[in-house]
Image (cartoon, rainbow, N blue to C red; front, side, top):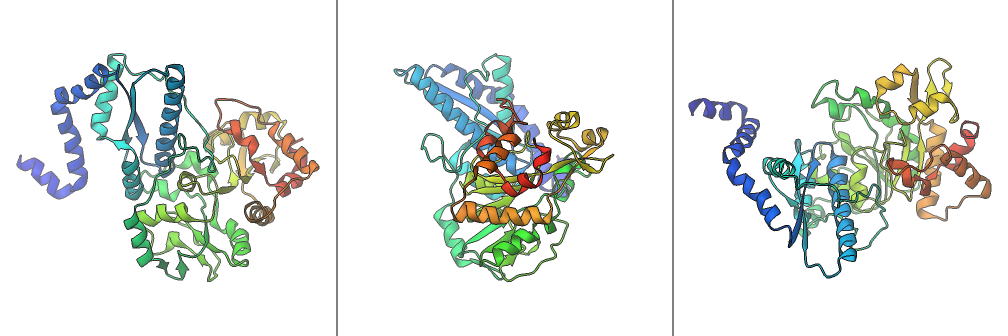
Length: 416
């Protein structure tokens, strides 16, 4: 007993969490009661228990909502098939991993049912052992639309009135006024992941982008009187840009779990590279636009958007490869840097002129009357011809998204 108390005193919360999870299994017979209850009541109730990855913020956000939307979709299918059924439907979540953001966790718990991870794991194990856990009635929805407001599908999390009172009292962060319109930008760096497990992020490093690549875009919107906020946590690189309308929130002393969620949730729109935090903007139905996307087979982007992908470059020729090449077909599904190294390929970031023109196109797309000429539509079709429909891939609905016309015209020879 003294030994355990010393551990709690020396290690604090990690030791308490470790011991509490072990203690759960002492009461295993009691825990078995929950899944057995689910089985006994299955004729009147349908209850699904789902594990959610709570470590990366993007997964924590999107997995919870998409699993919920998929569950709701399955319920609708069941009710159409059995209109006289009186069964009630419930979905229960439990988190897997550390909590990346406590504000997000609080908001999710207000909207959805969460149980202790150890209880959730026991439920899944018992249900699988008794062969009562199946994905058969579960229809997964890969893409959501920020403008889809159908009550049966759209269920974004909400801030409480107390949250807005807090923001009203503390609405000014340095020179940035949160009560005025603003947009968010986000680049990807490995430092956020490396702080928890050094070396773990190398395989995703091909997705990294220097924040200074965003300077043309930031300056474009600042010159039009629009505030720009740089988002991110534990970012290593400084931006070489200053403007009274630009706020480097990621490097400020105001960064917190609360504003990490609140700022993307209330921005005019979000410009990202397809990583983590932009999922929060999507969950609150804020438009998201993208640059430096790689690869298309992996990144989850909105369907009504405009974006630029990264180009695949041959290490031997030091030039972008064409979409009809063998190397392109081999690499377009690769998700690891080391596998790209084996093929002597790498992704190159978008150039400053591509970023600047994207900013102009986003401005027209969001605030004005954006349209494509027939020749631009033809280039769009030629690009998407390299990514045929596949129900198992994320880019199944990307054909509704618009690739930057300037980018396609500049690299037309690569996608013919």
